[in-house]
Length: 428
Ligand code: GDP
Ligand code: IMO
Ligand code: MG
Image (cartoon, rainbow, N blue to C red):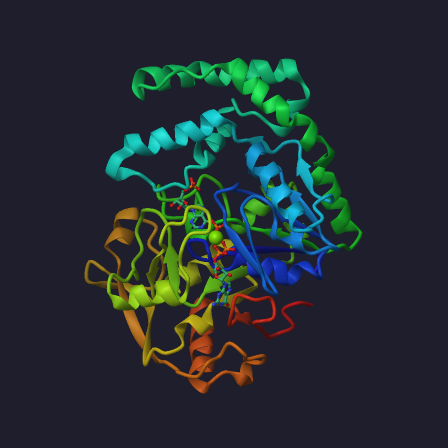
């Protein structure tokens, strides 16, 4: 498996961190290809728990080289504090590589994210407030600041001045805020330059060479398929492409080089922030999922919205990502329900719909059509093989596999590395 993509099949927080870490021991490179420190990836190793935001989860595997690709947006302050936090805990981070083409999240982008959300009022997206959207907007608008600009003061100054010209008008005249001093921004950015320099590299060249030499490269998505700016529930999305194609543009690797795309799929559904969510629960079942599943945001600490499994979304994720297989996570959280509803299709304006509607209004009106599957009460957290699972848990997994359109290669029964059931040689 020379190059594989691992991505979220729902609205994020599916357990990508755990899955990446699990594979980290058998891969040579782990690459983040989009997003930034809006992500919150939890990795539990023994009694140690790590929350990673910007750094690839492979950083915890000693043999693995972590890479921040060109498609990522990098907040230099967060980068350095995350690195030093790991160093203090004895993690060697010296192998990290950062693309010189990655864009920098500047303090004015963070400010604009926050004031922009306030301005939207009840139409707000519920962003993480980390400056992600405004930084990608600058990139597309061709007024972004890249990592490599830190090493040419004159270019950096010109770019920051150009970027702030319009923004200061906006801040002062629309948002009623003080204008931002470009010299202060430049000085602030330059202060990080030396510390970041040892990591900056031509990551596209390195990764393509590695794949050609038969090394194993894992592309780790942030967020999830339904948060993708093109394929998600727009406008309630993030501003990048977590879907599989994003790995190509966000790392500079052609699609012909990628031979496996794994969708991380939670055994139920969660979402943080605003936007439609057909199977969302507002009753005690939703509260039970939130409490048992520990469904609280790793980045913002917000409670996650919880609901039943949605097979329409899983099928959609299979389609838009070309998924080869799934890693089903958090099956253990469903222990104890007599019956478990699973959404198999939607009812929209009185009609049964099997596929995710492309129209935003239709999706907002979609009502889940549920099938009831029998639950189980036995503790499954110690299960090591598929046959260790109670019959009803096996049937639940098989039903999800059938509905979702790709085989399930591994099942999570707890947050720890070893709390995983491997099927179909997931790790080979
Ligand atoms: P990510 O953003 O996709 O990496 O996921 P998060 O880390 O935000 O959220 C997933 C949460 O579920 C974390 O607290 C993980 O430790 C935990 N987790 C991952 N897999 C499992 C599993 O199979 N069972 C249980 N109970 N927890 C899991
Ligand atoms: P991981 O990688 C869940 C959501 C935010 C908001 C929307 C836009 O841990 O799965 P942004 O700050 O990106 O502009 O916010 O996207 N969001 C996530 N939700 N998990 C994440 O990352 C997320 N990253 C962003 O809550 O609704
Ligand atoms: Mg998360």
